[in-house]
Amino acid sequence: MNLEQTRFNMIEQQIRPWDVLDAPVLALLAVVKREDFVPLAHKAMAFVDMEVPLRSPTDEAMRLGQCMLAPKVEARLLQDLHVHKHETVLEIGAGSGYMAALLAHRAQRVVTLEIVPELVAMARSNLQRAGVHNAEVREADGASNAAVQGPYDVIVLSGSVAEVPASLLAQLKVGGRLSAIVGHEPMMRATLITRTGDNAWVTTQPWDTVAPRLLNFAEPSRFQF
Image: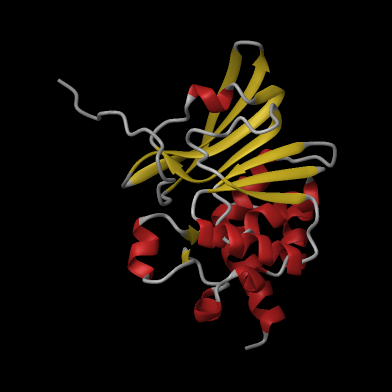
């Protein structure tokens, strides 16, 4: 496999057609080696337009959301957030550490939370081998323990939730942005929330997708009369 040609094809055939047109983001996707964050058993899937399971058995990993998001989803989330070099980022759902590596190249510092010990070890190892020194992986439940050295300029949920909890919004600085995939199958919305004041937020939902659930976030009843 010609990795550089395959990477180029991923960027040009999957990511750019999905309205990811920010030149620095596209350049970063060519620099951070996605294949180095994929488990050895699934290296052939590194550039495929799908989620990649991070544990075995793979069906259980996918059911529990223990996977890398599709490349085009990660790229568009990154583009939407407009992360700057002076900013501090909180990620919930470290997975293999790939999204944290992308964020770390654009931010001053990244704190990424992961609830699964095996994935904590994987993400730490992958980031170390990739030479990323401004991203810290912490074993924690992001649904209940996100107040880690906040508030933050940027918060990223690397997975889907039924709704964004107020406790996470409270961890945003004024001017800060939170990105999450919100809703229920068969269609969810990429949701970008910007804090504009002490008790003021602006929400946009620029595109649709579907992503696995993050663990332990509340699932409000969908029953309606």
